[in-house]
Image (cartoon, rainbow, N blue to C red; front, side, top):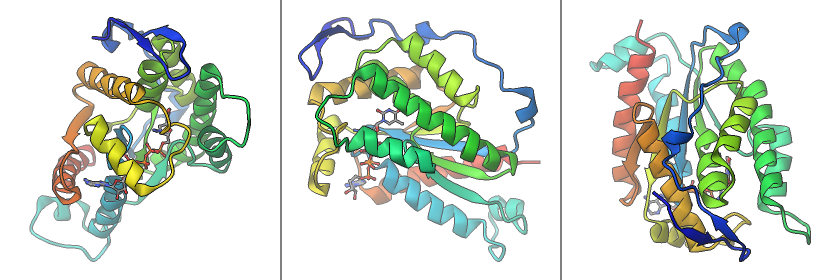
Length: 267
Ligand code: Z5A
């Protein structure tokens, strides 16, 4: 529970959300009838800075593409279930999973401007990226029955703009619903790493983008946001301890994916 006044990076005093995220939940939009039934599965990788989610998503994509190829066979029920079916696996991300989104990503992360981006403008840009992505990429793939692996989705907006920036959580929830039309992940892997560890990894990688340049307190609030989300959605969000070697983390990721995908596509 965050019940103290926190300092945000531009030195304004903001009141951080003082209630658990679950208390903000409102009735959800029903998915639009013409978009049902949905056969594909949406799996989202979330986490703070340097959590390794992009690494794990890339490995998962390569592994699943290999597992799902026509020739693959073996004793595991997984191979019998998918044998001859050739499930297509799509890798995408937010922001930047569409052509429009790639422009928005540049504006958000590497703005070539003197004036600062205001918090609500930032929120709306992430929402615009998402609306384009959901309609143009996610729904078409899911309608085809594809397995979609997405690097970040709505939980990032709650964690970064809600808990990190201190914007109104109810407003964010409404905006997320507008942008997604009610689409929610079927499974979310939250790669959880200590803030200092994650920032250290990111620093070793090279120059920081606009979001990464936020102060450590910002990233701590973001992590708190992911904790609150995991508590509010225990069925959907699976926490993975990302404070280990990439190989060890991947073992857990593989196990979670294998179980969830086999269950989702079971006849
Ligand atoms: N954002 C937002 O505010 N609101 C929203 O609604 C959305 C996003 C959708 C861009 O996202 C920014 O947008 C992000 C949140 C915000 N800003 N921040 N801060 P992004 O996902 O494109 O960028 P990112 O968060 O900075 O992710 P990243 O840089 O791709 O980091 P990562 O995915 O967590 O980690 P990684 O790239 O896999 O690994 C980072 C480095 O660590 C790399 O050198 C790896 O080789 C290394 N690594 C990875 N795993 C390990 C392990 N296990 N041990 C040691 N080293 C490791």
